[in-house]
Image (cartoon, rainbow, N blue to C red; front, side, top):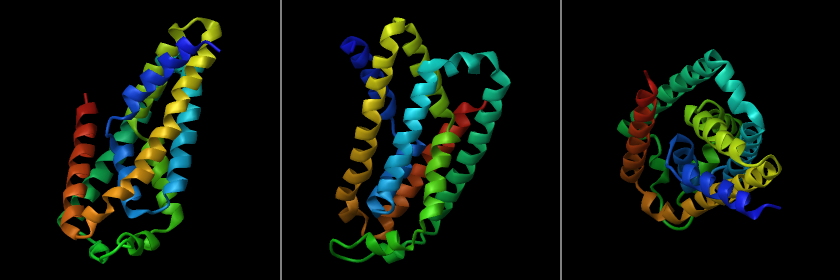
Length: 209
């Protein structure tokens, strides 16, 4: 294996994935709630594997050839982000998780138990596949960088990038529970939801041209 190409892929993916975007903010919130974290980490990791493989395999060139398709995906993603951002701000204004205001180590369990699996799974998929940043970062940036590697080193580059995804998502999802004591009161959730909603709307607005 070409370890130089492997390190290039790992370093590039690490520099892109740690940005607290809409997907990471969602994982952080679910991690604090301790709700379906394993499913979310697995789905986000598998999605990254598919996107990285497709990007390095030439999907970036396909996207450049059909820019209209990129626009359709982009605006569908922006519409979803806008809806989610407004919904999150509404939740921050009128929090619906007073049930979380309990003491002890089981602080997040009542809210986690109230979340059904399929809606959370679908939201995790939406945050990945309808997120315009995913296509810019993974398909275009990582795909283009992988294409610059010598042909025999592209697999090593892709594997390096893929190594970072499960490590980051698992650390974010399971490490977030350490913050649970800070979120025993609705006021803390209002701050978190307000920050997430504002950030998501800013991301959506920044993509409009």
